[in-house]
Image (cartoon, rainbow, N blue to C red; front, side, top):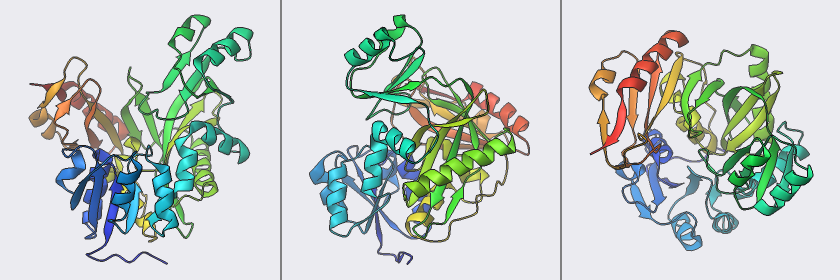
Length: 384
């Protein structure tokens, strides 16, 4: 049964960053009242939601109190107090994705075991409790070089990851519960965003290719991908199998590696809207934000047909600037046809902080890339 939407329906969104802001804007089209839980009363979503509630998504009592205010809960970040969500679920609160699914995704070790148990392709892995254990295993040859270390909890945007090529790099290991993966020889990194409603209907957005900067953050996203159609269909199939295996109602963002043999491997997943789906606002019939709402309200999923090719670039704080934000080059960039600028409303810029994004739509990928290069050169995020 679909969820009743009325002018009094209260959707709770845990965390109010840029993803929360764009979800709020999509929800406003359906006259849904949106409540945001965040520690920062100047968070991006605070300027457009119906109600801002100050609180910490990791605090049990804050999450319980917030949940009691709303009719349904979703989130823009998976690092939340799962015990509180499970308590609210036991009391009948609608929560998407389900807290039991979130618990698996929250812990990369449980993720990897889930992939193995469900025959979903990901790199070979081992689990370790500490940096010392990893060093010992690498020294004795149990772990062959090169390898990747990922902290089981808390990592995002390149944080919580260390790439170890040789014995000399062991000094760069992170301390904490970790997974160790075989280093995949990457040809291309791609993203598949797949939606599933509570009736089990699933749809994938067109596969996008990702390019990363020196801070291991997505710098450029290209849609549609130029990879062979068989590879794209295989990637979509993996994403559909995964969201069904998780029995997830909502949105799942699946970052994947395509290796030099054209094999596809899952790298990271996120049970929410994702940076790699920003371009869908302008370039796809249905944005990832509207699709999430369709899924959790159990409506038919929207068309994921490509309207125009696109290149999305993140607007990151310049490396040498920190303080009150100042944008340079807005006028020049807004004069370019097909350039769509999104500023998140963060007052303070820091090196590599996500301050906004730009989607460039054009009749061809080459044209979009050319215009995106101009934007990259002209549009800068600095401080006063």
